[in-house]
Image (cartoon, rainbow, N blue to C red; front, side):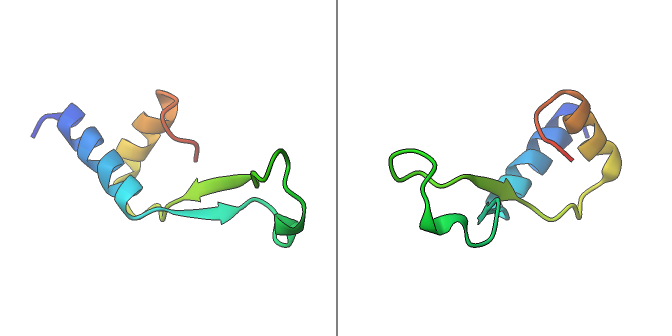
Length: 63
């Protein structure tokens, strides 16, 4: 299978299995600006590490 296709499919699966989480627990009391709370999208790293490293090196994800 083409490596670019595998990267795209991995990225899609990472998004579909991800969730939003607050950066700091208990920070929901004070919004940072106009009701927006700092959040980050997290995902389990249960994918091929060669693919994840390639996505990280290209700047698409942060490990």
